[in-house]
Length: 515
Image (tube, rainbow, N blue to C red):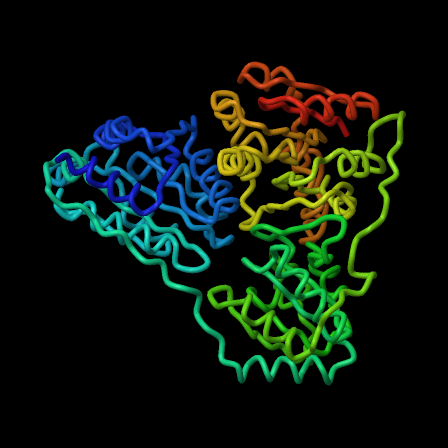
């Protein structure tokens, strides 16, 4: 049996269903193995950042890894940014990276690189095959490592001759371990601290923002009379009308510091105390109040559901205060120019129930996302690692993982150009994705950051580094060239029509919002 076929058989037995790929010569036997196994859905990305970002989106909505097929060190390097984002989200991901044949590495061919170093820099676990006989067992180990709770990046390095050789070996079907347990004494400590405080906060994150978790938090928050919060950017957050509102802390450090001001006790479940995205002259990096009692009850790797249930039992929580449940009607305009003041309500009002929103709206998100609390129930996926260019691939993978649900991507124009090739994959796979591009023709967030870091006395030359208006990008035409229906909208009427048509169509669409 060909060892590449043995690897695919092993991974299929463990649950693999999708391979996102941008392969090269060293991976041809793995490509052939995919063709031999119709159980696997192969998805081509025209850039490795699309491949790795799509695998992140797929895993966030399905709870299990896809496999990425990448070509040597440069291929892994091209996918690095969205592997970084997935690693920060703690998403299960399996990278299969081809390498030169074992006997060819000594010649330092043009594509030879420090592949092991690149893999270690981007992964939680790295394994290298040394022969056809160990490849399948390495695949089983990689699958196990990728799925250790809550998920991590596992990378297999596969020399070409280890994939084209013959073997009789298949790897085992592995058993995925449960999340690490929590000491009940720690739960008692958190309960006592929340009970004694008049200004406490329960801070959720990681995998504990699903509907069950946020509603348990709502019951605890009601019984303990404490505030509820989460991280600025999250893996997957259940939101919408009738669901407990767990509000992300603000992005800007001074706003987050003000948001947390006066809190004397914070209990963390599934996350850790927040810090600012960057250092700023004269501003704090560690954002929790200095004298606050910080209790890290449950790390991202522990059983947060157990912690929430146990806390709720101690508080005897049974109801959720109305103030924690979004239940407002959304008032939407019928006409006028489209702008920050009205696009949010239109967007939130038109979203179907069970939409998956992939959010990389950047500065435009400040005007849009607050309205979504009163939208129909949905899942919200955010830019967890801060490396822009994640939104379009994330939406691509989410649509493959949840084909019966509408997917909407909110994206700034600057970040969208990083992985615009995603549109081609969406068209090729006939995915139900609505891509909304906020076209302010600039890296607007960087204009803000230029002032915030105290870079004074700048002029036109610095401003040119953030401008995208010379030449202006025609997003509707660009989308059409990649097989995606494109719209350009400047008025309320145009945007409502475009969004309604896009959400009701079967294939991908792109709506440019000129702001």
